Image (cartoon, rainbow, N blue to C red; front, side, top):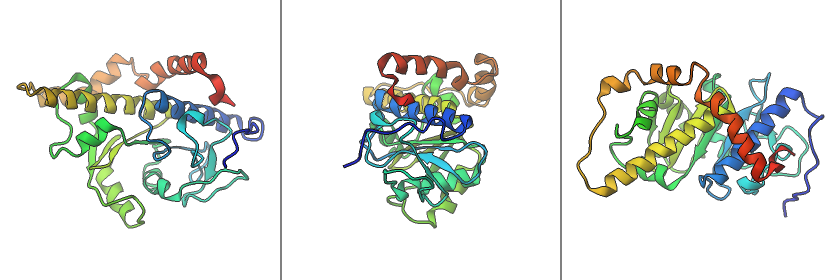
Length: 256
């Protein structure tokens, strides 16, 4: 039985680490609130500030709606626990994340989901189609990785990293969606966009109607359009404070 009476770690870690812990716990709660969780079987990781080889991950066995800043587990690049805590970690769950964190030092946060819409599109041979305004931002930084079974093998890491390249959205074929970002907020908002793209595509294809595709020339300018519409701040910085306020109104327990 996993204990849920969790003593606070605030004051036991640096202020920078505590801030990341709060944001990461919020991301887990928001994933649950938006219905993207898959019981306990997906992950969000964040790099511990000031380190290259330490990360925070969910305690294996807690539902995403139960995760708090203090319950997050600090691990190394191999998924081994680095602090004294009662919670287990699923090392297999860190295979994908560790590969990306090691190869992409800009990836402070990596978020992975198994949503129904995401898996449905990942199983479609053509992948993401240019059917919506949301899709142009995903398509401007999208990569694909073919399914090789449950991510347990070390040798898959090199292939995954090669497929990802410098993209910020990764579709894991027959598996799900993955986003990365320089902050927890950026990775979360990217996943919000990715999930919306997949939901729109599933509905559009289900309608059976003739589809209108967006001109590739528009997709080529998507990143510039994103910078303009967010005034250079990025979507994460603009939306994260409001999302935290929503959580605080619902249940501020993630800050514990």
